[in-house]
Length: 221
Ligand code: C5P
Image (cartoon, rainbow, N blue to C red; front, side, top):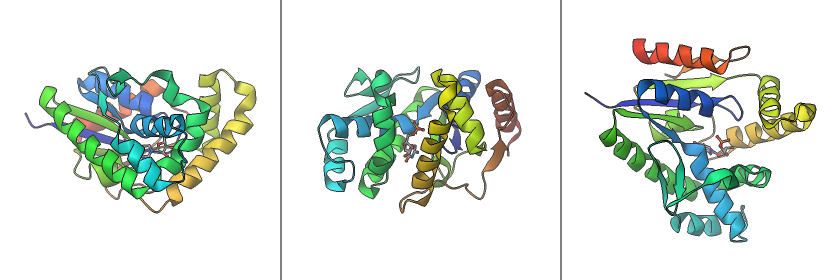
């Protein structure tokens, strides 16, 4: 059978990872978390004491990293599981400037396409998730989805997830800053592809979102 490629984009904290992971499990496809790859680059940049705003330095760090995925979706950085170190607040704060560099994106995107091809050979295909998987990385995906939710709803979810419901305000600021940065950058800004299906998730549980995505995957957009 032909490979299946499902691409899901949307802003920070909309629940893309959860939805994409559950959908991949349900459809027996690989899960490709493209944000984790940019996080791994940002983490390596910080670890080496490089400046996230210095494109040449970030590119050099990116060139020196080998990024791959285990079948269960675990990101491997130079063969080692990336683990929680790529999800710290520090990395989260610096990942936007690092991922804004065009030359860094070019390398990472090329690797994402290789990985998707490997995944397609191993199973039926992949569910990729990120900011530009529908617009730039996999414009020919079989199904393209743009997941959205209001910034307030996303802040509430993230605060609940982190177990700090009192800090919704601070998290909301953070989300708005990342939205602004990710959607106004020169290279591959976050935007809805013309042929992507828009799925509003305010008030929906993760299960309900996956239900809707599985329906779209079965019936086509
Ligand atoms: O999805 P996640 O929050 O892990 O992504 C971290 C950051 O990586 C995003 O804020 C964005 O700056 C960047 N990113 C990107 N393109 C993607 C996925 C993530 O620029 N396809």
